[in-house]
Image (cartoon, rainbow, N blue to C red; front, side, top):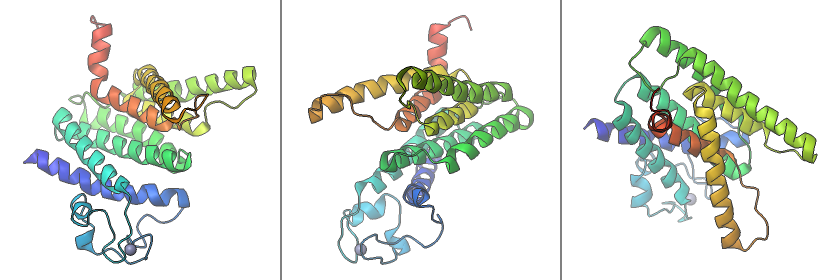
Length: 261
Ligand SMILES: [Zn+2]
């Protein structure tokens, strides 16, 4: 029953994340105007705006004009719902679930905006850094203890420095050597945000997974498109995937490599 609740909550929030993904890059308001068909501008009535279900009922078309609606709306709702379910199953209903759910919502919005327009929005990552640090302080001093997800304030602060600092240094050295700008500033702020939410040990593992997935996907794209050289892929979705892997499996991985700790 509670699992179903987590799934429905995730789908509802996912529906809102779709709006954020669409409107944040345009700098528009995320609450008004109400959702409308991008083609015929008809406002979408509440019964056609039910997460997941409406898309299936309407078979991915606008009720008014029949224009095809991108399956991505459905995908984002399903992804958010599935992750909410997995987080709930993993961490139970509590502070850890709340913090990690807010965190993955930020990751989803950032990933899809980066895929769309190749920008990691500062309006998410910068407040995200502060929010992650604040939540670790609340977790440490007010909720105290029980949660294994929320890092200590010191770990969170070190995470921001490790995430931001490491990439800044790498980008600086890369630029000095090659004369080309390497990793974007947006990715640096994103990694600082990941460090704020997950603590400093997450940084090396997140970077490792992100680079690994980037490499594999890059090769796959080369083979699929027949391109001669590796394409420059948006890196934020890979960093976000790496952070997700750490969120779910970080503990297990750290204990596997450092059994004594
Ligand atoms: Zn329409």
